Length: 337
Image 1 (tube, rainbow, N blue to C red):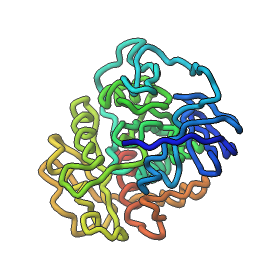
Image 2 (cartoon, one colour; image 1 turned 135 degrees about the horizontal axis):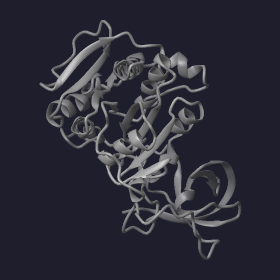
Image 3 (cartoon, rainbow, N blue to C red; image 1 turned 90 degrees about the horizontal axis):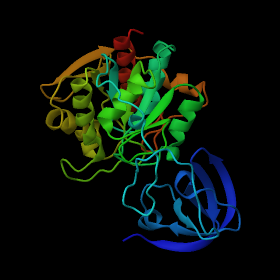
């Protein structure tokens, strides 16, 4: 069951669109302003402490659930379609599909299916390093975090022009445009935001268990199949590590293998850095191509962005970032860059 407590906002640490960082009784907390509005120093608030109490991956941050210092709040309405439906925080975000129909085709646009949110950085950077004119749109699924505003990575990539626009799909919210589901989000990215390349995957906070199918990244199969059904060209970014202590995630993660061998039913390009050896069987639908990827990490560093994955830097686990960059470089190649 969730855990809540009441406290007082003691400090505002920072803010951006959709998000405030605050302290409540000296402890850090997030405020999702699209849902509950802003808070001020001195406000009495209800804080959800569940993840911190359990030692989970919110980095020690609580979430402000409600501001008791206000009798009511009215945030900006986006339309008639609700996200977080039938919860106390349901929001009328609206969706892009409300205004008019979107063509049900991707027109051959490459779509990179991410296994982890952290792969977005090097995948997008590699695309821009190959051809800065290519327009990159990120489609965030609802496989992990639902508020896009929670992602510091997306905020940095958009600010630096590495990602040009965003779409949030399903119950994820906060993108430049909202969409009802993954397939519709892909077409919205293509036709409303003029994507030359789409990078699709979950936000921060993936879930993994010790079971074969119980993990967020299995959605790679759904992204690949949706891309092909809509006439796009699917590319899988392999989850790779040489530093993860868990056997199932060493070199090519079992999560990538299972997603491609059991959850993928249509062709998928798998781009790997030149000289890669010892790949596991990735199933009958995978077509592996070696590619000389650009130095995406340096590209990001020059823009003040230091990518990490599972808390590890490129110096700790370089292959993780190289494989993400390979997917981006291959997407740029298919896009004509």
